[in-house]
Image 1: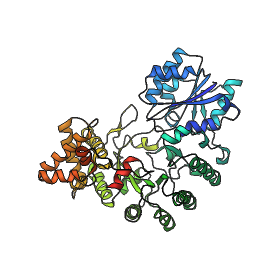
Image 2: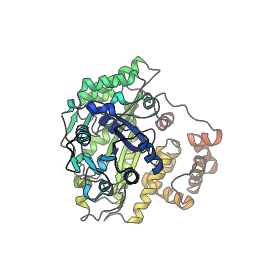
Image 3: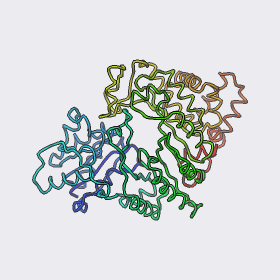
Length: 495
């Protein structure tokens, strides 16, 4: 095998769309190439051994914030034991600030930005000459209709066991400074007829879970409607064999035509990821985020009341200029809108993002190692930030998991942020842990907390028993998930 494409995915169920694009666009070299994926946590020696077993001349690695440290160890070992193998890096983590990265020093070549066409050209030069003179190769952005779509490269095993990632467009017109997409000039759509033909092929091969990675799915409403109609047609034709689609929505852009389409989807068929990030207008202005907060809130409220879509809404703690009180007000406001999940994220300084310009003026202190999480700001000290990190973890275990749908309402009361922060502080005092807390122990701790806050023991037990967590702990029961919906979303539906 001449060319081997590889990456370390965050988990097995993730299948790398980027590697499949590279393989699909290798042209004549495609016959000499293959993909070999791993999962973070794999033993470095075993990864290198499996790579070399393919006898590659070139190994191309997809490098991301979640795998850069482990990939660095793989590249280091690979170059030590097989220095004749040419290593090419690509991906967002090595597309910016390349001069200061150890993994770049270890590798032979780096492709920054779009790699679809440039990687193929680079491989041709390495194999056939003339040899490339430069180490860093800026990715060429071709016309969208010149990029061969890769969906035929999802295997039957991928379709059966892994998330199928798809994209109808690339890029983003917005300039939010914490996001790498802020470097894009606009969003570029793929030819829609060709894309839908590929989706049809995936569906016919058995794909039922489609996760769109478009940053702004609903930017072009005509395109959005055609794509959603594709899924509605499948649902109507085979209601007992439903599909599940995940989209990222711009929160303040939901015209009536799109609402009418969304309202037709049955439970367990649709998820929207909605980035709010902050409700503070001054903070939004600082990070160049354009958002009509009233419209965004109205749209989330409408989706909750009039659709069956599962709503996963993002907030970011630690943005420049935002203190805990401001974040708490935004959090409480978002809870009142009724999303099924609130993704409580902590700001990360992604390489290349313009948010670095606020580091000095706003006292931003970031971890030097991936994922470059903010450790403190001029408004939030280190100790408080760690409390927020723990809040985020316990929130995911208790509220987002869907296992405590009834109980969490009692936990939050009339002051969701303050009440859950008190619970979070208590939990950490009791457990000294935020991970590896068994479900039965978690349910017991939640019950103890409710009693400490004045709820009679019998009422706390009855409340927990009404939830999945209580049922699972007492009876071993598991609610049946809708055919297409992932398990966690199914719990929210069953609540």
